[in-house]
Length: 387
Ligand SMILES: *Cc1c(COP(=O)(O)O)cnc(C)c1O
Image (cartoon, rainbow, N blue to C red; front, side, top):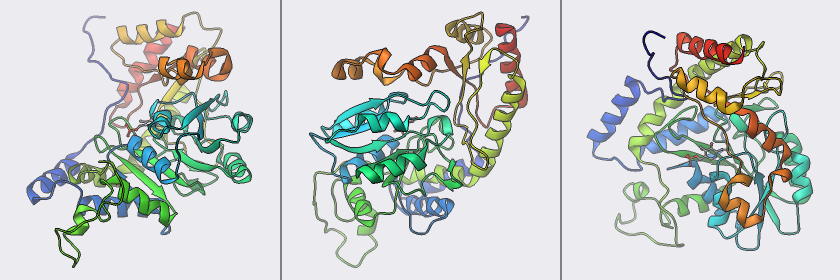
C-alpha cells in the first residue's frame, strides 16, 4: 500500500441542498419547533404509505414512538411483552419503562427475524403484546405472527426502524393489520431527520392517546393552540405526558429525505445486488433476499462467515479496518447484554440461532452516498482477506 486511502465508514447520511435549504427556511421562519413542517411531513408520510385510513404521528425518536405505542396500549406492571433477542436494546427497553417484563425469543436462522414458533412457545397468561423487528430491512413473517396474535388476543407493535420501505405480502410495512408501527429516522437509517421517528396506526383512540402523551399530556398540541378559535393561552393537562415531539427543523430535513426515498431504495438495491454477485464465491453466507415480489429495504448488509472460512469474524473486521473500511455488528444480542442477561437469567444456549449468527456476522458498508468504487474497495478487501 503506497498511499493510505481515506476511511470508508459503514454508514453515512445522504443530505442534499434541498434538505439544507428547507431547514434554513424553517430557521428563518420564526417557527422552529413542532409546527407546519411537521404537519406536512406527517401528511407526506401518510401519502407515501398510500392508505388514507392511516394516522401518522411524528416523534423525536423511534424509541419514543415505541414507548408511546405501548403506553397507549395500556402495557404496565405484571404484563409481559415478547420481542427478539437479535435487536437493538430500544426494542426491549421501552417495555421496562412501563414496568412490564420482556420475554426474549430466538430468531429464524435464515432471516434473523423473530421466530414465530418461538413466540408461540413463550406466551403465558401475562403476555400482552409482541414487538417484531424487520431485521436489516427484511420483513418478519407477519402473516403467521398476526394470525397468532389474533388467535391469542395479543397486541402487535412493529419495530420498523429498518423497514422503510419494506413490503410483506406485497403491502408496505406500516399498512399491515398490526396495532402500531414505528419507523426510525436516526442518522444511519434508510432516511434521516438526525433524530426522529414516525408512529403509524389505524386506531383513532390509540392515536389520540399517543398525540396527548407525545407532548406533556396536553389535550391539544402547541401549534393547534395558535390555530384554533379558543383562547391561545388555554390548555388542559390530562396525563403526566412525555416530551417526544419532532421539531420543524428536523421535519424540514425529513420532507426531502422522504421525497428521495424511492431513489435511495434503488441505490441500496443496486449495491445489495452487486454485493450478492461479487461476494458469491467467498466462504460467506449472504443475507436472505425478500420473497419474490416483495421489497427488502436493505438498511443493513449483514454477512456471516462460513464454518469453512480460514479466518475468524474478528480477523475479518480487523482486516477491513486495516484497509480503511468500517464495519459494525448488528447486534450483540440482548441475551448477552449484562442488564438483560442478569435480569432474566439468560444463557447463550437458550438462543442458538441468534448466538450462532452473532459469532459469525458483520455488517459491511451499504449507504446511498457510497460510490461503486467505494464498494469495489470493500469487495476486493474481502477477497484478499478470505481467499
Ligand atoms: C435504530 C433502532 C431503534 C431506535 O431508533 P431511534 O430512532 O434511534 O430511537 C429501534 N429499534 C431498532 C431495531 C433500531 O435499529
